[in-house]
Length: 195
Ligand SMILES: Nc1nc2c(ncn2[C@@H]2O[C@H](COP(=O)(O)OP(=O)(O)O)[C@@H](O)[C@H]2O)c(=O)[nH]1
Ligand SMILES: [Mg+2]
Image (cartoon, rainbow, N blue to C red):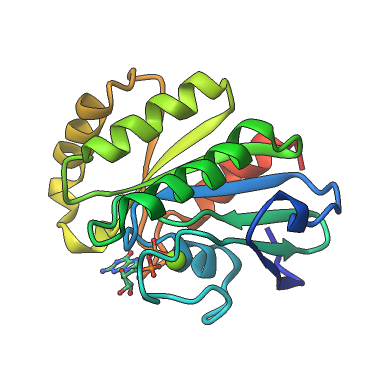
């Protein structure tokens, strides 16, 4: 994918603010700090497009990025941040859930997990929710630079087992830091969007 344009459109606090361009959308879901914003920057090869490492627990905002006037990358608020209140968790749930279940132009969900660790209970719940939505999805295991190449398979197998994913569902190793996996992920996105 050649990126000619990558632009932040809006930080939406609710459905009334979602842009109605009609472009197909890909959304990123995952725990706070797993690297969602970094992955966006790696995908579009722009260093500071999505803000990295900002205070986790910004539970009420969905960021939309216009890519080439052809598609939108959508950054959901991260889940699993321990320090947020029950009320905030509830608010995350509603916002994310509404987007994931009702957004017509949503074409693919990218579930981002940390390759080093066994997926958390939150990740498992998220994946179940994604499966029940019937949407297309891809699981991406980020921070692959943190483990050696020889450890890749072991970690991927662990994630697969913990998330209960069949062999035929691919888990893509990725490093937003080293930009490994960018091509493979774009390929998957383009295939799904039929670009
Ligand atoms: N080593 C390493 N660190 C990463 C990678 N991706 C993100 N990070 C770091 O993880 C932290 C959280 O990243 P961020 O993109 O803000 O995560 P988000 O909360 O999911 O959006 C930051 O300190 C990033 O620099 C990666 O692939 N490898
Ligand atoms: Mg982020």
